[in-house]
Amino acid sequence: MCLKTLALVTLYAFAVYAATNEPCYGRNSSPGLCVSTTTCKEAGGKSHTGACIGNARGSGADPGNIQCCVKSTCTDNGACLWESHCGGETTSSQCPGPGTFKCCSKRKGVFGTYKTPSVPTSNCAALSEKGAKAVMKEFPGRTRVMYCYAGDDPSSDHYTGMAIDFMISDAGGVSFTYVRLSTLFLEVSLGKRRDLSVRL
Image: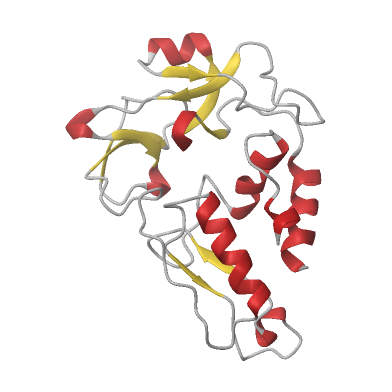
């Protein structure tokens, strides 16, 4: 129920125009950012259509010449990622967009390559377990670890095992520039992902 509500609220809140330098996904869920096709080409990237929101209804049409730019190769067999995603070394001035979108080398353990974590069975409600598995199956490699239970607040859904936390960073508490859970549900509004909440 919580996941269903979150999905609906998130889709409503994020179905807006995509701004330049906003995060996106290209083909095969490759991380990129919304920039002009000219900027992308000049930086050696490849533009992908339909990944940057085109209107307030989230039709998936790209606004003007703004498309999702992916640059999957750079120094030391790296790829262009947001600095907050990179579990290795970063190199500046090799990627399109803002200075925080850098070439990330030594990509082992980087966001998007995590092994699917186990789902806790102790104190986890069946619906939470099912929901967590559905989300991680739909977005493989995105979750480092997940939880559903915390016994410190009786008023929280975590207290009854009815909530899900997805840890998508190498370090707890580290803010991600790109791909919060809300961004994952944004893909649903683009028609690129099925609405997971419907299937829970």
